[in-house]
Image 1 (tube, rainbow, N blue to C red):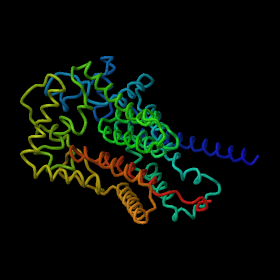
Image 2 (image 1 turned 135 degrees about the vertical axis):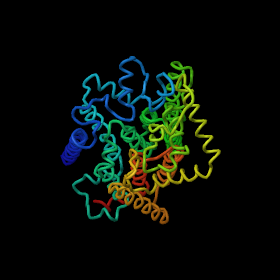
Image 3 (image 1 turned 45 degrees about the vertical axis):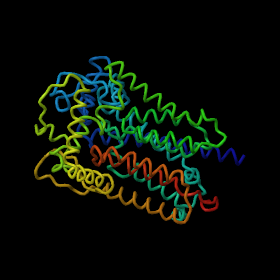
Image 4 (image 1 turned 180 degrees about the vertical axis):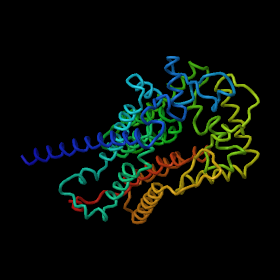
Length: 446
């Protein structure tokens, strides 16, 4: 009888949490629609989305194929062609799918945000402290002495209640808001892989990550390899390697698709941080005086960057700008190092607004959300370092945190980084730190 009551009470709590996530997703979408973002306000459509997603939706619908014909500020002014490998497919295809139901941005916002924040909540719910924290017997006064629960609460606060973080994760035209959910669930699955054996699920999540953003590939590879290490010793090698096999299958499927369409095998996307025009955006003689206050698009949009040729396709443009970026790096190593240090500072320490459109009198105001993020991030890291000194940590998540953080930051330091790129870094590290402390004895929280 008592067990049945406990089961029913637990089911009610989980249903309440699910309802809260739906309400949160709808609420944050309405805030976006009516207040946050001019590109998603009433009267705007999916075709008005920024970062070239609007034109991409138009071109996919017009050509009835995965082809992106983008505005002149990217490659269009240097040649009359459309692209296939410019972006990974999940975000454009999701937006195209939503356009069949409505061109208004509100339905897409609601669907996207219920899924995004639902996945983030699912990642939290898989944490070992969650079950006890939603129990009626949980003693909240004991949280300060329970690092695992304290760090999990720090992540929840950062992910759901820090305004700028919620804005980034709920935006339709930022890829960061799409891969965050799958990434966190993948990490939660990985940390329990020795018990739950959810290797296929992990592999599918990793495939989704790289199909959202190509620069997720190094992190996905790290998680796939770590799954082989974290698996139970008696686990068959085929199951251990399943995440890696699924990830490689997704990688070669995308490359094969692009090869069939263009005759070139795609190692990611031509609009990734380390490719072509994007690499040159972060490494050129004009941006060093503008970054990070102003957008890296300004030298292109203002005519500072001049191109003396027409490109026949995206690959020729990619090769041209890659060569220009490498030439700048080779000829100006001091400036490259200065830029790299600026980018690293943005990722690790910056708390001011950046990436503005160019206006000579623009002020770099302090962003309160970023201040909170930095305090939470370095407080969590310091807590884990103290626990490491006391030998009260699980080394698996500690190693994953270091490797994943490095893999995420490297493309940003080579390409370019702005505040919106920082939020996934902060949330990923905060989430991982919540798994580093060893579990408390049962009587510590009950």
